[in-house]
Image 1 (spheres, rainbow, N blue to C red):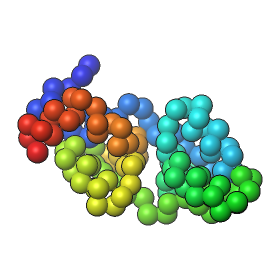
Image 2 (image 1 turned 180 degrees about the horizontal axis):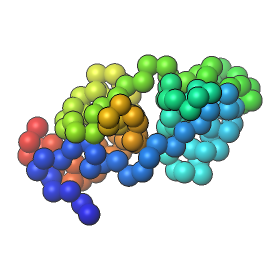
Image 3 (image 1 turned 60 degrees about the horizontal axis):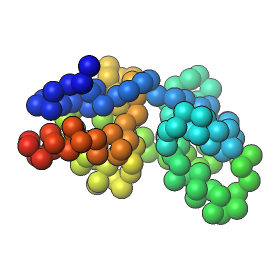
Image 4 (image 1 turned 90 degrees about the vertical axis):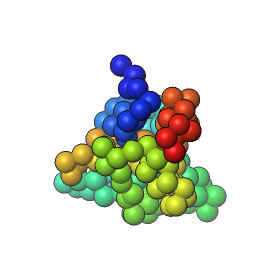
Length: 136
């Protein structure tokens, strides 16, 4: 069900749980997972399964441009500053966080755990843009 534009929250944009990859997986494995799931970012987990970072398509492109072997573990190129947004926050807050931090993905948290990742593409959905125009 599509949420009404009024009162639009981050949780309304979350489509599925975050797709994860262990920090010792290779950049090639990460690229394969992103391609198979048609996504631009993965939640990187440590050996206990706890989220520690985000790996984005930008990180992989940077590694390629530096001629880094794709067998290199993702931990060498992941963004260790994990910018998060609460599921109950407004879409305006998400847009502002992306703008201020020059990022395209935010980890969505609820009750201290990651429940999804939203992208800038989620924010340019016509329904969201209409909400921002009316309430922003």
